[in-house]
Image 1 (cartoon, rainbow, N blue to C red):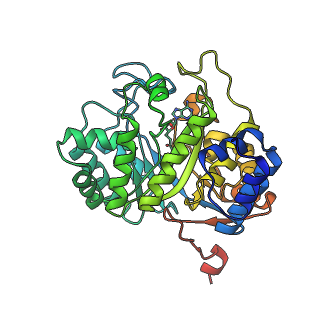
Image 2 (cartoon, helix red, strand yellow):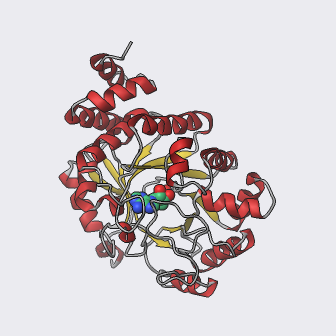
Length: 368
Ligand code: V47
């Protein structure tokens, strides 16, 4: 029998976990305002009136990649116009440019370059840490990690341990896309499969590394494939408790093959997806509305649909989304973040990578 909307709503209100079939009813039948209010209730229970952000920057070492994912606007072949592959010295310069600033995290992700190996990435992390010892390195998608570790001929545990020893302290959520094997074969046939993504994160959690998870939605996937994706994450989180945040990533269509003939989904679908993520992933502490991908206005709206994090200041250091049609030169000031949070009736809280609150002494008091 098909689950009834009122029964499912009551379950969510009383904090009872819902099944995939119940999630499908909620996703398809609930008015948007109901989803928003359920997601907000849960968000308030978990993080009160906080909207988390951090002061971060990205390093994208290369966009040369062995894989040809159909949704990617970023990937180039070596020698193609627009391709880059920074040397370790250039990466050091990018880190050096942040010395003395107030950033607390560097997010390092890029293409899967055929010439690089585990030792190269270990050296990259060491050099960045030598320049910015107090900055947390959150680095490499599960796809990049699986590639470099498998190439080294060792197991995930050992490879991750070596990277951790070099200074990698957390892992971002990229590369998850959609776990459904059939769909994955259509949108990114060559890259690491779902089992590999989940196994890599399980191994990371096993050695005490916190990680994030993402889902690429709004292309050719169905609602049940989205729920299946959330369900596989919820099960892994039950097992390990190692995920910090879930980040639904809206498919942006510019400059990629998958976008040809497809419209981007409307903002209402973004809000449903955020709210459903918050409701279904009852064991995830944080849901992130990645402002770079949504744009600032939609990210602000996301704060009333269950998100409690909007990522960071970025300072024009990532190209993955601008190359797919999002804002060029993305950057957000702390003032802007505070205004966004206030307009949602919430309070901006600066966090470190692990969601510990950072309290800064105001300049006026420091001068005394
Ligand atoms: O895995 C690529 C996605 C991801 C497109 O963990 C696209 O804190 C939409 O994972 N339209 C990389 N999305 C980015 C990522 C991320 C971002 C911010 C924070 C964190 C975190 C992780 O970007 C890829 C892929 O799913 N992506 N192309 C596109 N055209």
